[in-house]
Image (cartoon, rainbow, N blue to C red; front, side):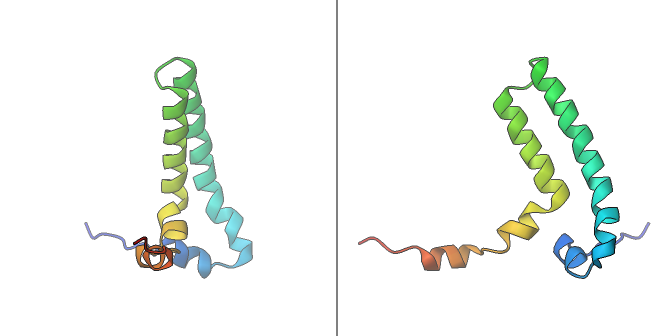
Length: 88
């Protein structure tokens, strides 16, 4: 079976028409809502600590909505290093 190449989320949303945004984001949002409910239940039952629950929700959101593409790639490590004053 041939692999399907999906453009990055940044490319998808950058080239998207405004009218297509809701239809594109809604399936991901529905999955996120279901996962958050599962995580909340796990915290309530004591299977996860509240901190672990929050971390898991954060990781789910980052994965589904492309945190690394939207946020992390906006600021490269080189940019951070260049803006950090050296201490001598």
